[in-house]
Amino acid sequence: MLERAIFCRIGWMKYYDGKKPDDPRPIGGGSWNKRYPGSERFNFRNIRGKYYGFCRPSRSHNINLERIDPTSQGNFLERVLVVFVAVDPDLRNQRVVGWYKNATVYRLLQKSPPGRESVRYLAVANAKDSVLLRTEPYERNWHVVAGTGGIGESNACYLPRGPG
Image (tube, rainbow, N blue to C red; front, side):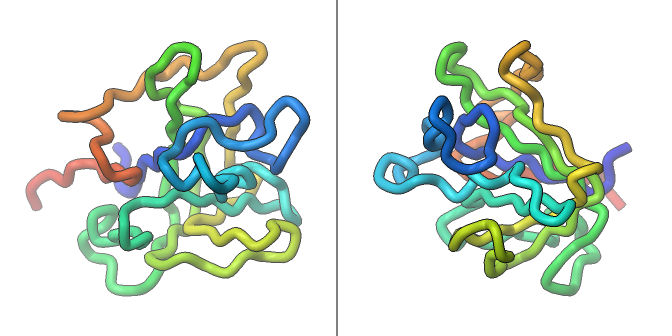
């Protein structure tokens, strides 16, 4: 049973390791990505054995930690599964592109570590505990529902909490 998890919608890329000739910037991902390169472009860049993940969860840019764990009282949560979802531009539906297991998720944007340029992050995990699904061969096979019962307008989707 998943106790602590969050789904984060981001723009579509192959590698999420900075600008590459065949992967220059995120496709989709909102109005920001139309004018600027999205900060998620570094979500799977290995920096001293860590991945630093970004998504724009809402207009406030904050993660509601209490929606992940109602007992949360601080500015971060540990041992969270962060699942990254993006719209496949060819299939035109949302797909799981990768995840961080045992991540630390922060309520507020954190300053970038050296090597990640000037973009901020909201989650950090060990690279060995993380998976980026490939596009060749195509491994992004998990479809994620959009709208009612799935990821709605916000780019952060929290699992429903049961009673007690």
